[in-house]
Length: 156
Image (cartoon, rainbow, N blue to C red; front, top):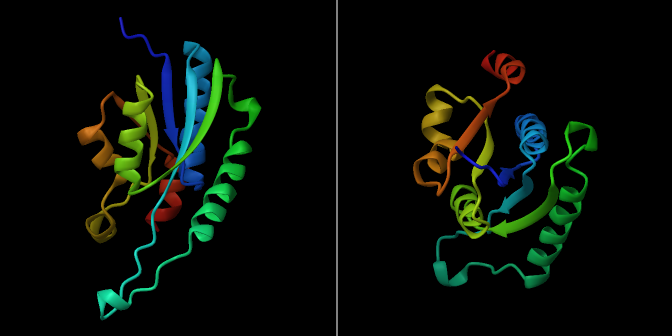
């Protein structure tokens, strides 16, 4: 029997992620699991013609960005979506897929619940799929949630 005690639910604050987060909350309540809501911030890597002349972002920029996201995570979960055993939030830096996988491993997650934007064609080729990369390397099962209502509007 699979015992799900810790669920990681990454968010990029999109409508797709909100749909998956609602699902993760209800699932955590039903299973009596902890819910970890995570956002991964990408480090800005300035580029220019001469790598030695690239501007460097001051540390204050990163601290303010992280504080802003941490504050947003405090209110991203609506209590009406479900009551997990416990709820924690985290902000990490790095590429989204690797940041999510690393966090899940650190927390000994039993499940990752993530949204899929349902991209197809050229946008999928160019942008790739964070969810797809996570499925390939995650230390635990991954449940992908697609919001059919949002997929219909983005297919047009």
